[in-house]
Length: 199
Image 1 (spheres, rainbow, N blue to C red):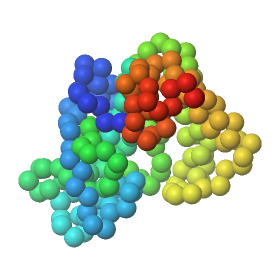
Image 2 (tube, rainbow, N blue to C red):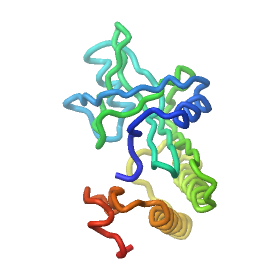
Image 3 (tube, rainbow, N blue to C red):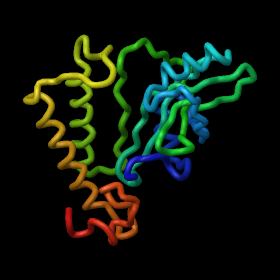
Image 4 (spheres, one colour):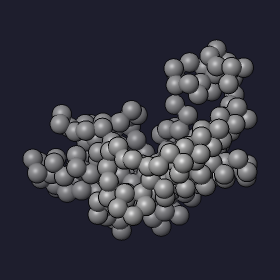
């Protein structure tokens, strides 16, 4: 996986977290999914878990990193027990996650864009961030901000942005990947033994 849970909490991650919430108190949190939880649906998952087990919701940000390229924060919800401990009940491909609590944030049913932070002055990285911010705006404008799951967007509005995002992703990957980096194809092999020279 190219963009995923950081291996270590670095000074850059602390700086990023502080920009988001005013503090740098992120921590690794084990994913212990509830049996009935649905992938990528953290808000209803936590609400349902509270109904059965009490406790409360803790909003915050799931922090991800593409090493040397970008950091990204996605609004997330976890369960908080009466004794103040946390549990992430939503299935996720990575375990643990890096979680940054945000007591000033709530979720009102409207989609909220990820927060992205460039780790280099590479113009391609900055364009990649801008294009992905545009994709969010197009797919969440007006009433779409309250829609979940599959939505219908006119092809002439979304496809050029999606194509450019994919193009930039590959350009950045090829310019920053090392031979032992995870391959971009997602098969779990090293770049040098997989798609090197093919993309």
